[in-house]
Amino acid sequence: DVKVTQSSRYLVKRTGEKVFLECVQDMDHENMFWYRQDPGLGLRLIYFSYDVKMKEKGDIPEGYSVSREKKERFSLILESASTNQTSMYLCASSLFGLAGSDTQYFGPGTRLTVL
Amino acid sequence: QKEVEQNSGPLSVPEGAIASLNCTYSDRGSQSFFWYRQYSGKSPELIMSIYSNGDKEDGRFTAQLNKASQYVSLLIRDSQPSDSATYLCAVNLYNNDMRFGAGTRLTVKP
Image (cartoon, rainbow over all chains, first blue to last red; front, side, top):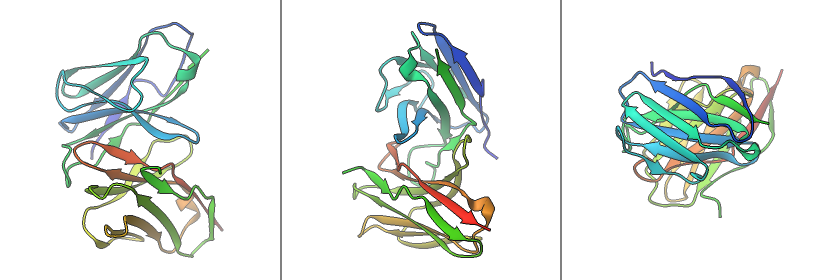
């Protein structure tokens, strides 16, 4: 079974703090993703990575950065947290991007509250 | 037009009935189609993937894909209260360009 883990289930931070969210997958997947999910807006892609040290912007990268130093680990960084970044953050991974191997498996999510 | 559209619901069916969930997508080049189930406060879990036109069955679940009509559906037979959740339709255009619908909330009443 694919296992994707995230460092925290719940996190409370203050405005202006630097926040690190970590994600680890144990299936040797090439691709890793960070989404945020908000009521009425669905899942929105922040960043994804298709290889170590490689990253691509998603739909809403502003205010976020990412790091992938090892294949199994993908970090999301909020450089200076703001209240509008309060959300559920979901990490996912997939083997490859082509049909047949592009199923994304999700971690349990981190509910981040920025005060 | 949204890239992936679902009826937000809520859809309510009695226990034992068939629940039918629908999804349309805008890009004809889409190659992969997925249904995820998401319980409140939890992350999405994969129910089914489908890549070719036609039906794909897995237990009580059947996914149907019609690329000509740009339509994908999920049927849940013998619905159970434990099936009550939000169902997300996802479409992969090409090489990691995955788009999610907003989800349909299903309630199965005992």
